[in-house]
Image (cartoon, rainbow over the protein chains, first blue to last red):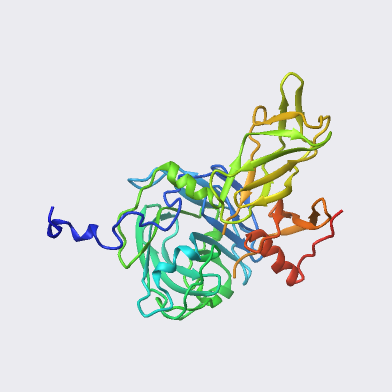
Length: 360
Length: 61
């Protein structure tokens, strides 16, 4: 086929494969479980991978975060934040932020930011809420940059899926430093106190991260237990045009998520003494950095022919070496163990998971 | 910057040579062991809250 016959939409920079910089944009991966309830003051990842929720500043609002099957045509899952305890009088310094499309700095250097040819980013998504009106949305740089640019979108109809497309102009003023630290993310202040409202700077202009601009417009979902915000089809791509969502396989997306968070549900262990067991693990995907470790519930270790040993309480720790590729880890709060004997984790452990977190 | 993890019970853990090798802490209600890696978001926040005087890290047992 002559080149002149190729549709230019498929040879432009933004239309070639691997367009979507956001991971888990279709909200199918939920390594932490499908639902997290009673989220109070916190700053963490709940339920779905790569979506972070900040709830801070003393507000009394609490939320449930869940993976839902309600989604627009072409998608099967969505992320929902539902208010479960309302706060109709938010403290000035309070906020509830959804942070999406967090991206390592090293993956954005091709944008050429800090030069006159800095490339734009376009963020598109499907959204649904009982609230209507304008909502500020921020492109935020982290690491060495610490700047943001604000835009806004409008929810026109309550309880209806709507697609939004927003372009953030490239940053010509400051270059992003190389590395695996957090370079960029999209922030949506779904509720905020007065400290974050009333900003009047122009849309689409990069500047320092001024507080008042962050929630110049907010849907304020903390106001009622009827309030919710739902999102899926999140795509962040280079250029000023939103293209169709790039669907990737479940396996690809899961592997990408594991760079930031992964769980282990089975492994041989060996007795160190009568109260501790150790294991050496090699992560299936190299993580972004050395992870924090934790466990979701007490573990039952199985010793075939002898019986099970149950932890009296959670205790999972680094035992010596731990890197972004794996390490040696230890379970404690056990009893009746025999040194050097093999015990199986995962054979009788129920839902217990060993958790490794190297999130941005 | 928005990052306000609720951190309590922070305590150093030592290796077999008695060098600090990680921090055990309860973060947002969950007990974690955090590597001494500034690139780790939990350790970065622990360092920030220590600098702010919000928390202290207890010596290892």
